[in-house]
Length: 126
Image (cartoon, rainbow, N blue to C red; front, side):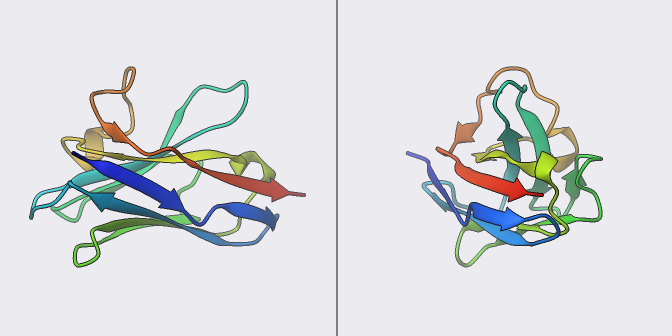
């Protein structure tokens, strides 16, 4: 059974940085595709970043140049390094696993049969 646990969220001032982690269990192997999504109150869920085992990464336009997604195979952990944070980055951030490719991972309908974590809150104050 796949289990995803996010951590690293918190409160930070605009311009600051945070690193989110997503520890995955039951989702192993040489081939992987994992992604980050976020949802703010009253907003639809938004794909943020994705990475696959080919090394391909994909980012939402709103975070390009500020966020970096990475994956540690040895630790089976997904990361999201967030920099130059803005108040509009405030949201619950979710980790997801089992996309097909990073290029196709962010524009999904419903839960897309991904495995999902419970989320970690990021709050950016101005």
